[in-house]
Image 1: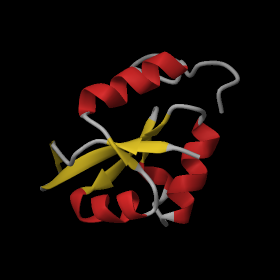
Image 2 (image 1 turned 180 degrees about the vertical axis):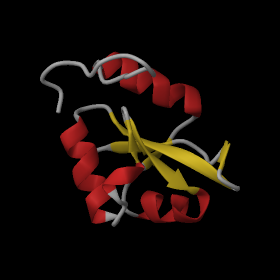
Image 3 (image 1 turned 45 degrees about the vertical axis):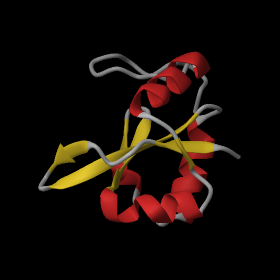
Image 4 (image 1 turned 180 degrees about the horizontal axis):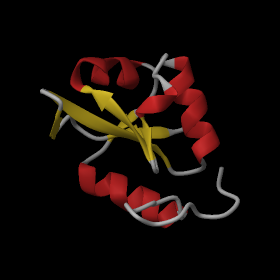
Length: 93
């Protein structure tokens, strides 16, 4: 199982956030997030939003550190990229 995380460079709700993604499946991503005790409500379209204070926890658990651009490349290459306003890809879940 390999999941990836970008640096906490995304502001929101008074915090900085990272994106946690899989390049295999959403199921793999959900399992990893569950092992970190990340609530399912943190899942948004194709990634989990991870607050900066949990970044090191995700890396210790095995998330591979990559750039934000690489997160997009990984999702796109795997066919898992879901842009705002688009429906879910079929049979990826």
